[in-house]
Structure formats: C-alpha cells, structure tokens
Image 1 (cartoon, rainbow, N blue to C red):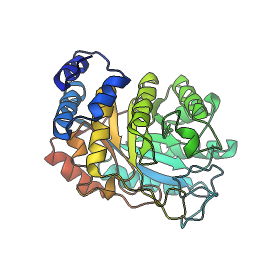
Image 2: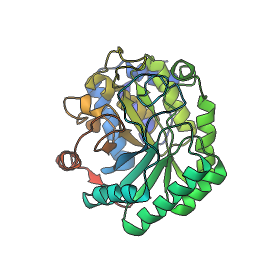
Image 3: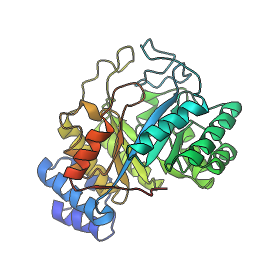
Image 4: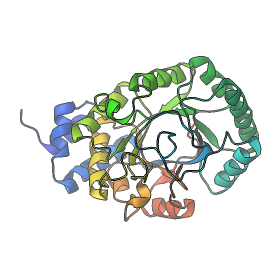
Length: 324
C-alpha cells in the first residue's frame, strides 16, 4: 500500500481513522514535516485551546505496588518523603494558590493501589471544601476505586479521574506485576459510569518500542479518553529504571505527533519529565500537544506556572477556563 504524509493527514482531517501500520509508517518519517502535519490536525480539531493543570502529592510513599519507574514504591530504596493523606486545610490552601495564578484544573494524586474507604470519605470532604472555596476544576488520582466510590467522588464535586495505562498491554507486565492493566481499564470504565471524565496516558522511555507506544495510543482511542498525559521517564535513583537512557525532546516530539494523528480530538498533555527538555516542551506544543501539567511534579521539580503562561501566550494558545 502506498502511503504519504499528506494523504494520511487529509484522512484524519476529514474524520477518518488511521491504523497501526499507518502510525508505524508515520513514526519513521522526517520529523519536521510530521510535526507540522500533526500541529495542523491539532488546530483543526482543538483550535488554540490549551488545558493546563497542576497536581498535588496528596499522599506520598509506602506504596504497595511495584511499578518500576516510581519513587514512591515500597519495593525500592529512594529518597521520597512519606506521609498520609493531607488534611482539608492544606488541600484547600494549595487549590487557592493555583487558582489565583490562573490554573483552571487542580488534581489530587495519592500513592497506593487505592484509597481506603475512610480515606475516600476524608478526600470527599476536602473536595467539597475546595469547590466551596475556589473556582477550580478538581481531578483525582485515587487508584483502583470501584464505581460506588467514584460516585461519591463525583458527588463531592470532582470532574475527572486520572489513571495512566502506562504502557501497551503487551509491555505492561514488564513494568508492574502487583496489578494488571485490565485493573486500570476497569477503574477508568467505572469512573466514566459514575459520570466522571477520564484522563489516561503513559510513560515513554521505559524500554518500550515505538510499536508499544502506538498500541498504547490505540488502547486510549478505544477508551475514548479525553485527556492523554505523555510522560517522559525521569530515571530516579533507587528504582529499576535508574540507568535508562533519557529520551530527547526530538523523541518526544515524534511521539506526540504520532499520538495526535491517532487521537485528533484529545488534549495531549505533556506531564512528567517536561522539565528535562531544553525548551520545557515548546517544540512539542508545536507538534500536536495542547495540554500540560504545570508547577511541581509528584516527586520531581516542575516548571513555574508564570513561565508556562508566558510561553503559551507566545505560542498563541488560550488556556481553557471552563474545562469541567
């Protein structure tokens, strides 16, 4: 089959879908043209809207899961701080801080396989207070909750649930053995049944192939994920991936561009590892990405909100204010 970049771009622009073989072919094309085409697809379906969020490490360390990239896993010896679920006052304080600086979305992320029932109740009280105090959208990453628990989170005022698939189905068992990717998919589906939007993506640089990355994007497409975080592995000392070679900004631009072809309407979000890039992801925002996490990451330093807002203005983006 004859393929060309212009033809595949037009197919997507006209509402068609490309398949795995098309995506693999795209991944091997010259970077400049690929990125330019992906950015055209982004503008066509998303305009200049940009979804900006910040995250807070709501509960840290002593995680029972063995995800090989994670500093919070109890399986590995890292320097991460451990503490229980933060109280309402601190969660509200951080929400106010971010809201005042123009961030429309605030995500509470907790370590562990899932929050316990009492922790869910505590978190729901905190979410209610946040919504009463700050004009900000609340997202949660509370692990493998069930639908009844997600319904409580929704009732408290949360809008979105985050749970990364991390890698392709075929590669996931190499990344984590204490739960399955299907467990994550089941949780995402439960969250959607509860009326929450879903956010899910993965980490690049775990040792996976481009085919794995494409399989991940196709799985996210099947789930109709609205927000897709793309993390670049920051190899953390003490984890099994501490010696992994870092990807380059060019690698990330290529990944983002291929994801945009496969997920033309999604908010493709640069997440962890963005601060490792010389331009803090600027080239990726010209290659199809149109969302980001700003401020500090969970266990690593991020990029200041003000610097991000200035860069986005320079690039002609408009931060979405009412994003659910």
